[in-house]
Image (tube, rainbow, N blue to C red):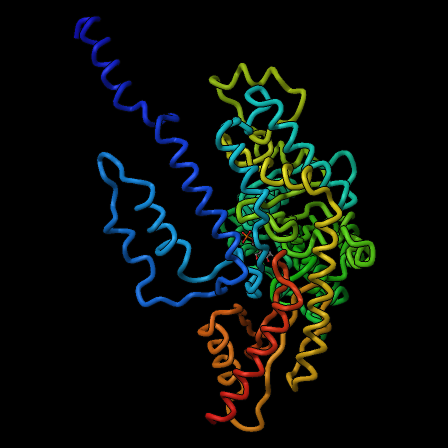
Length: 484
Ligand SMILES: Cc1ncc(COP(=O)(O)O)c(C=O)c1O
């Protein structure tokens, strides 16, 4: 094609693709989206925590993708009816299952700034401000956890990837690769989150020995039996190298005896990893700080702002006490990155994580912390702890059996009817609450028993929510007893 022909073709394509930038429809489209979101937020309190539909999201595939787009009203209709409505409403205060968080709205504004500016937050050279913002948040979390200046970390998508990153650092620091992997021993508790096993497999440690440690009556790792197991493993020529403990288990919210475990790891030169994805931010409460004693002695910690800081899903953190382990595990060099390597004022996220191009996810955390300050976050965490204790007392009064006294904001309970299958009764009770949909709870198995769980961590969960749950449970229990 001659130059003139090329120019004409370029102009024609430019004209037809111009709508990808802000155009005459921008203000109408953005207003429609903001109006929809604002309306959703205003109605949040009246929305159910769980919606059961016959064929949820069925219009999505047939909606397809058109060559020339479609009006925002049609799209928002699908968003509302088929995407946002069905299933769990994790933004609702009535979400009391799994590990909620709620998703504070200001965080969405942070995401908006990050997406509009599209700052390249993987490399300092590309975006010094974005990288300094994320590194500042990482150093703040290191301080909160009592880590020294040698520590560093990474903001990633969630707790699973954060745990994987810590496992990779531990593996490489202890040379648990190749032939060593098969002789390596990793210690977990029955209460470890399943993403730890996934992470071990992904890190090539599926071939290693995994010891599920004995637990005490409170489902905490029994330090004595851990010590004995390590000694036995060493005596038979194995290579113990990693302990994964929890500061806030998913099932029941307990904290392992971190200080005692740290002693053993020190003596036996084990990498001590603490999964504090759910519970870590409770350390911000002076009255709970002592329960985390020993976490500062760990080699790595996972901490999820999308749980304990109530951010929307998409932000987990790995902290590693000695930054060089992250740099060794995730180092990279490429010819096309040679300009970037000269700018080393700050460590780039890409140098300490598997990601290169990444969402500027620090903004979704930095903006709320700047705008609100820390105090409301602490009060919110305190409120969740108190609500869990309140539920514990009230549900016991209603004749339910309760598990451990809540250490943080997760606990288990069940109803034991005089006759019949207890597990089946509680499963039916959970389904009763789920079908009603006002609030949402989840269940687990402890010592082979079906247990209902309460997990209070949505910033929108308040006293009225817990009272509603109690009412629903009592109503459901009475209904099932009548049916029996
Ligand atoms: C203790 C703990 N670790 C890890 C995870 C996994 O985190 P994510 O779901 O963010 O990947 C969870 C999730 O609930 C958790 O509770």
